[in-house]
Image (cartoon, rainbow, N blue to C red; front, side, top):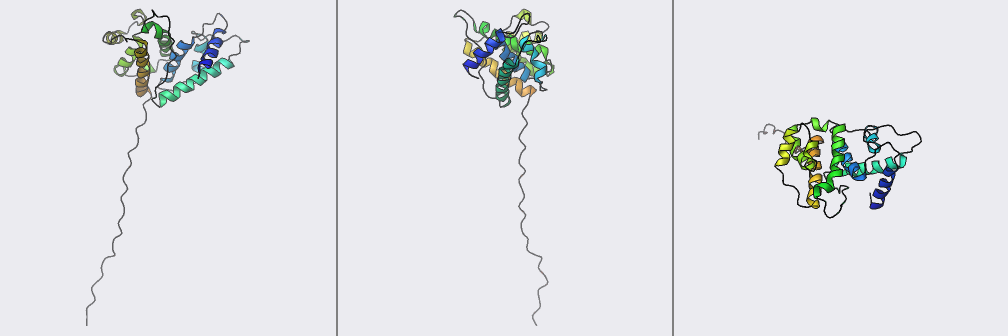
Length: 213
């Protein structure tokens, strides 16, 4: 999706009627990553309601979400392809003013990821030890008060160095998503080819040697 698509998506999200509280485009991007990293694929009907309202309240009858949903599903497919193939993708993280820290800049994306992980908990139900490092790299950008009952995660975050710049912070988000994909959506190992045995033609057994008379 190009820049024009992102602008169009942002405008459609802004037009979601009150009192619904839609995600912004950066939160949406993080949310979609958390949705795609669930070990069991989710149907659009399960996760789309949180795009137009963080509490998944029903849409008003007169509101037509088709254009919005079409753009969201396009981004979902883009991210799905990248994550499935373990390819780098550009998260929708947008620079703020010059005084903003890397963590402040990526915060909306991380908040969206956290929403998806909270609403759909199968990812977090996997081996905690395996999840710890990539989750810490993502959640280090949240306030510690937002991570209740997560002592192991907080302890892991304490061991990490804050990113020096936005580029490093973004790289950490993408790398962590691909690491989580290896845990929740492992790729099948290629089946080793069994070498064929070439059957050798054997000469027929020799008969008795005729006697000379």
